[in-house]
Length: 356
Image (cartoon, rainbow, N blue to C red; front, side, top):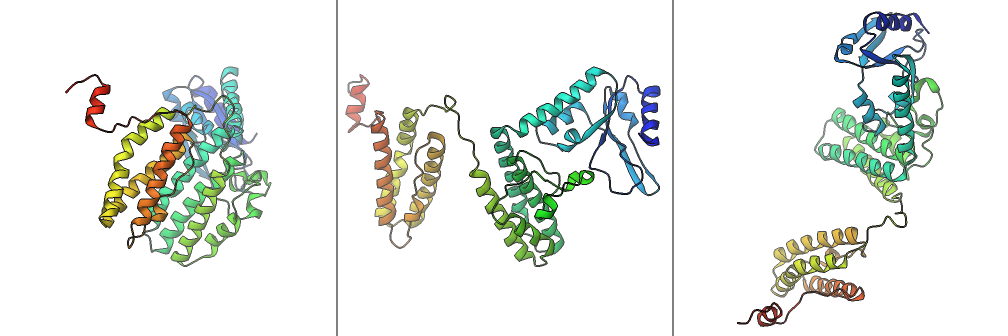
């Protein structure tokens, strides 16, 4: 333990004994040869007054930031919403009580449990992918190299996090090469991810280009390649549902869905027959989204409607829409689910006991 650590522990015991639960060091966060060795990184307040202990200063060119990290914020790290390394790479330098120490060790156990839960890491990878796509929406309008580099870097950071969690580990910085990823240097764990053994196709090769490319348009092409490959990598690792946990498909819900959408099919036929290209395309777009939703929600085969669209000849779209409608009706019949369909208003009213 160094003099700085001795000083802060003494200060806590003398002035903040009831206000600070833990003082922690963080392995892998120091730069080499700072000659101070591992010292404090953050502390966990036990009361509002504990926040007053926070301080930043520089000693012989080495910056130090003694800052508070609340129990709630540590919970965010457990859930991989904040830096996991502040738990996983931490060493307890001071604990107010055995209870405080055990509470922190429980956080570390729960973090490792989450990292080894296939369902949890898959959902988290999708979250990181969504964040990358959100940044990408801004990137596509950029032309300035420094802005493109900045946003491309943060996109790759989110993609790195997604790939890392699917390897049941975590990454705190973007990973650009195999040499960087698989470095086991314990003094700079924040920059490496040695457990990241499975990566998307071309992941390191494309990431390395982000360091050397100077053309904004070409850099965007690299980002698109990384996004596409990582998305494929994530979707291929969707965990299988365990027997007994799969939601039973309600084919009556499928029937209700079809009854609601049947008017869309009718409109498409009308628009195709009358060469109303824009209207046909609008309804085909809507129906295609509904078909994709149905495939995901009810585990029914994915159906392709829009490939049949030809603005110069709508007969193919009409034929495809009819075929897909017939397939829906067949699926319902296979599962002995009836569609509420009537030949006339009189028949509809008669079934409901209403005599005209």
